[in-house]
Image (cartoon, rainbow, N blue to C red; front, side, top):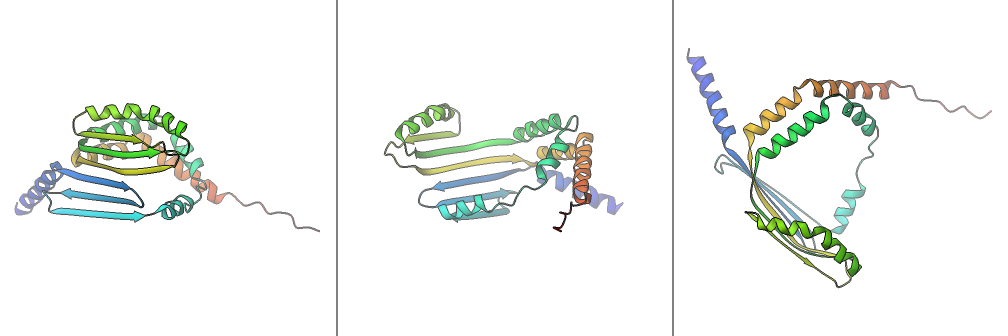
Length: 207
């Protein structure tokens, strides 16, 4: 009986903790160097985690050029994507995840410019709808063009989001355990196994 009470108390504690929102704060500064900061708060600040990253143009170039070759990823992904019902399940998961997010604050203060002033004007013609987001609550957007003829990006982006863990975890669990996802994983594993077991062709040696 005591064990059952302890088990129920632990389950109630887990449910209570998952019902508390997780706060995620993100800030990206774009000046001479790119600085990124991610802060996560949970359980009224008892759980706190912060990640910082800083790098210049050379670091960004190295990250973009140092990625691994995709290999058989495209073939495996295509084989899994063809499974009936998987795209609908994925869109349903994304919809549920977006419902579990609540935007507390979004700030964008950027100065943008391209090498050609005409291209800068065209860029802001495409970006003009984003300025209307500043009319929504908790959004503050200020985009300034630079027609000096130099490609620049200056300013910062920041956002604070509340995440409802319980709803997102239930959505992810329902997605992972759904029959389309199970069939897709099986199809991907079969395709990967076929790629590994396929014998390599030997080039005939010159006589």
